[in-house]
Image (cartoon, rainbow, N blue to C red; front, side, top):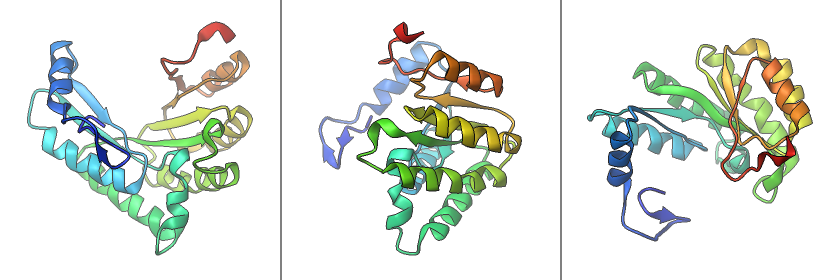
Length: 197
């Protein structure tokens, strides 16, 4: 988006350098480029390699966002091959010390028009193979209006990873307490009003 491309169209000139300079001016010394699909993970890793020449250190993530989980279904060689490609890309990033998190993956029932609940559940479960392949890498999890299913799955898989953050949280106080009891961090979007707490 910082390159000005939205939904395949150039909407404005790239302002990536300006964004980085503002971050440097504000004292930021690390930036994580988050990927939500295999294609975006490849682009994020390439961009990370390109940008790691200045004073700010860049890293990336590898996984499939719940709203893009149909990528597994669309892959010409099938979901298993898509997952193998994710694992290979994550290994490449890890070997270069640029894999900062497995993510962003999880469940997003607020935006089921992009990927239905059953596919989200199927590929959330499948992506735990990424976690098993890289158990020391933190998780960047996504949970939006999917508290019960999300907490059930993460509780079952909690022994597979050391730490992580649950991003896009918009659940109840009880769900927040359940997440914290799993020794995970919570990321709350700027649009979310804390009035429910």
